[in-house]
Image (cartoon, rainbow, N blue to C red; front, side):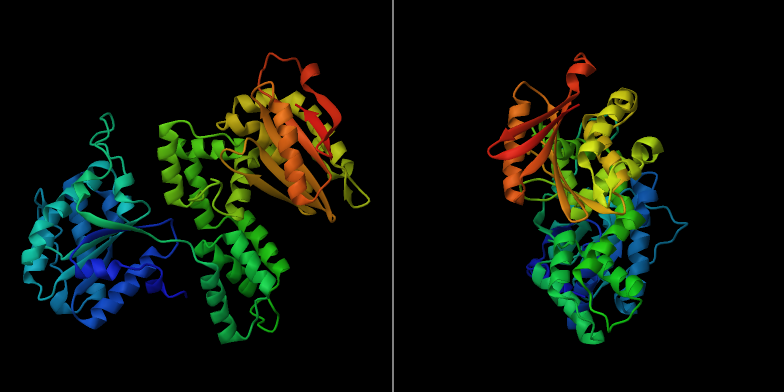
Length: 500
């Protein structure tokens, strides 16, 4: 385990100052682990009564009063799990009526009868929505001034996916947003738990080596860093699968780069709970808009998309710094795969039989793309008309076709980012590299722009040839005009133009 207390600096200082604060980060990045470690440390020092309590069950509350009663019950239960009897919070009688400001009065009663200042860390605050979340914020805010006299917890921390200021809370579904977290304007600071650094990943894997003697080769560590980009769950999941599943706990065998890439593919195909919860977010409109922009390479020009971007960043789906792309190579591969999976299964075997495209162990990309042109002409209008992600359906349809052929014998690396103006694919098969650029024909210069972009990309990859797949957006253009196959030259690079 990476030392959780070193991952956030300044929290203890705010507690000493009696401040309120927020800790937010994507799921399974160590927020709760940090809270529990901090609770253990401060309780051992003896100056405070510190409690971490998950109030996720309060999401079941049908109204604010019931939700706050459940939250109080969670605090009471957790205090009996972690605290000595003398410092435990009051029992909440399930049969007793809870007052309108019940959480405020409950925390006030606990604070007035406790001999030490209370530090309360409320976990899973994201579970509360709208009216219930608002009620909690108002009651915590009401106790802020009373804390100096010992009438409320000295310090309160909210732990969740998002910063409180990023929540647009509606009192009723049809009402306007009240703004971004003004009921908690007493918050002194927000802490974002960053991804694991390369040094922390090396330290984590080194602890395993110290205990078992099993070595992670430098290239394997670098591969884990690259594929996970420091996402804590992915780091552990990759290492666990290699050690426990592939090598069957045989610590005499070193962990190699090849084993890391094998584990990556298994994680993508297996789709554990972490990855499934990520995929489930694709159903939300605000996530869908950002995903479309990344795959299309389009720019963000709408303020609503900027709000959606902040939401996706807090969820850990996309990067926090430009260029805005999916947060790591595993997400970048699994999200397009999942979005096009039903198509991958639906492509007729006659079209997707590797026999037609793989000769003597080599992938014939020309034959594959010419077959896709025919397939696209026959099926695209009907298939795209029923697809929720129509804006990126053309690119995803090609990815599904490629995945069906390449699966098992090669790999597809995707490079997509907001503002790129295209999606780039690198297909590796039998040690040969095929470079494809996917671009939508928004205007008359799209082809020229795509040629230049692909030429620069080929230079970066030290490749001499690539394919520019240009998708026509105007349905009025006849198919005989859309379907093209031309060999072109641009900046010293050989480019095959594939019109669709």
